[in-house]
Image (cartoon, rainbow over all chains, first blue to last red; front, top):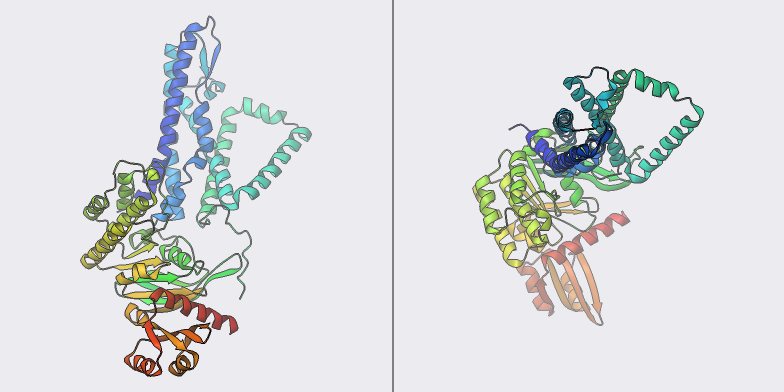
Length: 233
Length: 293
């Protein structure tokens, strides 16, 4: 019996409910756009359908992280939890990207007027594979950022995480006022795919860092000791 | 089966466990007793691989449990408030039990669910405390792990269910001998099942002995001060209470015929002390001695 089977099934099940709800919301949104497209006279934008998926993948780790405790309580390890989270996340990510691409193409066929915006619309001559790949990279990037944020939160606890978040926000606000960010926006628009791949690479690095932070993580949230102090004799 | 050498664990500069040593090579049912905060739960977490010791060696069935993916086949730790997902029903919990345990006995699991009359399709989050304990017991026993640990297994069970738990535990142990560790604050609840008792106190394993040896110890004497003192002799006194001219003491000694004879001759009432009271006083006394050392 492979030792990863149990941990994988626990994480996969924990992620499933959110995923199915998300599919329901996305399809409901899509149905609404079909209705709205009948009310439009011009080819105006109807909205987005990737929104729920992008938001859920950013916050997914906060939802399924409970399974860390379930896995450890059933005799699994921290490493198994992380590997299971990566595999389950990857499976749901592929399914999500396929679904968004399929819905986008169905939309092009069924919308009477108007269109739904897709993140691959920034790419010239995008094909179905490119639509899938752009959604995949965005979902992957959000998943990695969400994972890293939750791993920091789990290891350091709410207070220390909020302090770090405050420092980052102050840094970003300062950068916004004192650094010319125009080249960054220009880079985003002109070299969109390069930007997206770099974003995904950063996310991959964050996922690797998350693994190393979790492989000896504390049992309870916020119990990570940055400095180990020996016990009194 | 269990090998612990010089185990130490500290948290926030405080020693939770220090220099714990225990070796058990044969399948046996062990009662783990200790007061609140004595380090019982920490020891169980270390044995199950949930926590890592700071120092020392821990092996269960020949494997070191911490961060060892194969340890799940050697040890099952069923916690007092064992965590279950809000989305799980009994069937889900049993399915995961099977996935995590190599020796899983599905027939036994099904039998226990029937005995405990647990609804298979109901979410575990809606269960009462007793029902949650029952599903935890069922998974622990059906795991048939070489080391199965139960933390406060009878909490929340009524007398009838408790009796059923004891019966199925002993039947399962007879059929498939393995090491079972039962932790409890109330030794009388688990003592009838245990061949050995491990006492944790003062952050270490104070005693690990045959239940019969430990259980025979602890004698109450009551009578006039002079008469009681004449019976005590050189025996260690664990507890002493004065009530006017009366003196009540608990002795760290078995209730022998010789002691009974001496008490009768001195006109002192003698009786066996309850096991729980004996352990409380024993650990209290040893903590005092350690504090003075």
